[in-house]
Image 1 (cartoon, helix red, strand yellow):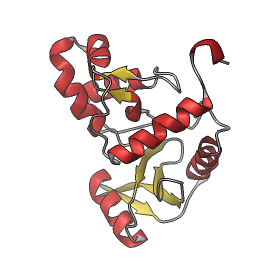
Image 2: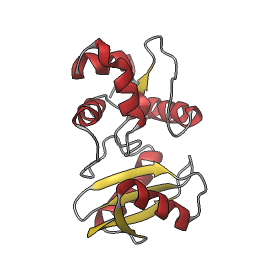
Image 3: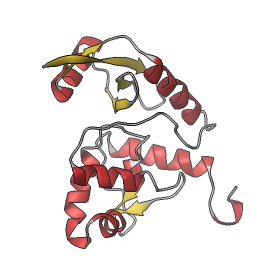
Image 4: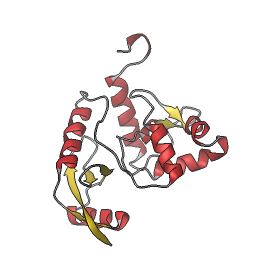
Length: 179
């Protein structure tokens, strides 16, 4: 385990369950649902996944993430501002960057993302990259749906994806009622 730079973790209650935020001194690395895992188990899981020592104490970045999450779930925050540094392959980084362009209250298909990051032959790889997204909600993989409009795959569970899309739809209506 790399002990050179310690990461910091903080847990937050949300309407969809507890989330853990993991950050270094400058950027968010992880934001994920913990599904009632005890803190010690959650911490051990994050350490295994990141290969870094993590202390169960928040820092400026995790605290900021917590405030932004609270505002988002209250319907008052449309765009997250916490700096991000998700670990992933070059292709995953391209997919996640593309997801960040999908506006709140809107959706895209896996094919839409594939067209922009490598061509239609990468649709399955786009789905896999979505599943590997370590920063849920902020990198909005929940906004990616099937080309037929169906809700397909979400690591946090389809019920959460449906909730998030409804929540965002209420926050920023589209069409004639757009802000």
